[in-house]
Structure formats: structure tokens, C-alpha cells
Image (tube, rainbow, N blue to C red):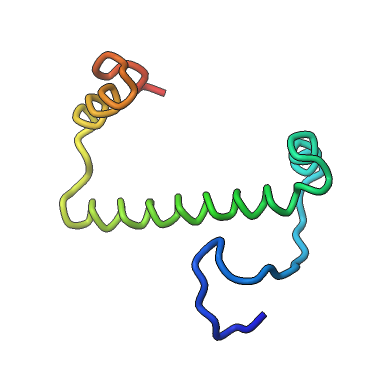
Length: 92
């Protein structure tokens, strides 16, 4: 794989690497996808983690400019999105 190429997550040629997982994690993955689905499962998991990391960075930048989000407003919007009563399920 060329190091000077610029690919987005999920794009470009495949490249083999070695990863170390705990036995329980690997067993759980194989139970879900079988032996031959492990690489694809890990690829999707890595893509989701990159999306989460990017979102965390955006939230951090937003809060640096605008301050932290109002918890009551977040709970109300969560309720609208999930169809729950305002604030229901917000406490975890």
C-alpha cells in the first residue's frame, strides 16, 4: 500500500495487518459473523469508531465556541427524536 495516497475510511485497496484481540472478543465476533467475516466486521467497527471520534471533535469545537449544551434542551430534543416524553430515558 502506498503511504502517499489519501483515502477516506472504507475507500482504497485492502491491506493486511495483524491485530491482537482478547479471546472473548474474538469469540463473540466469530459467533456473530463466522470465521470468514472477522475482517469485514472489524473494518466496519473501525469506520464507526472513526465517525464517533470525528463527531467528538466537532462537539468539542462547538462547545469551545458556544459553551456546553443545555442538558434540559438535549433531553427535550432526545424525546422528540425517540418519541418519548420530554426527558424520559435521558438519565442513565
